[in-house]
Length: 185
Image (cartoon, rainbow, N blue to C red; front, side, top):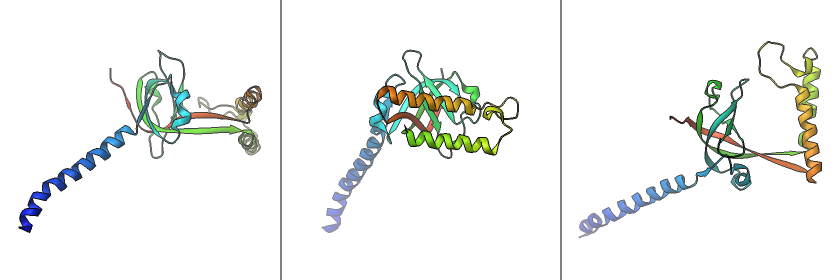
């Protein structure tokens, strides 16, 4: 009798376990929020630390190290910065202009006075270590590198923006890529 009871109970247990697995798979899929280039900046504050999927055209891929990709959408305003995640290969600059589908985690960079002072100290330290570099430029020809002069100008712009807005910090959002694919036409 016990064997018959367990034999009849077994299909219910299997179905229950199967249902739980399907629920977990469905929950994992639901946790990815689809965003667009046009709505990313308005939604990003609520999505920090969460997984998103975004589609866009690669407007620029940094040639220096391939760790940054900027997505645009020809049908909307905005530009979204995507950086490579840990253990992820660099983006190939040859793919600039192609359409990407990126899955990643939304991250926030907070720019405040402490951040700006640390940045300035880093620039000064770099200049002291490499006095032969003019305006922070790399000595080798053809390298894509931003100058320290540009960095100091950016620092000034951030300070001006905080003053104009009457805030003591600025938040900038980007996506740390987990995976990506190039959309086939």
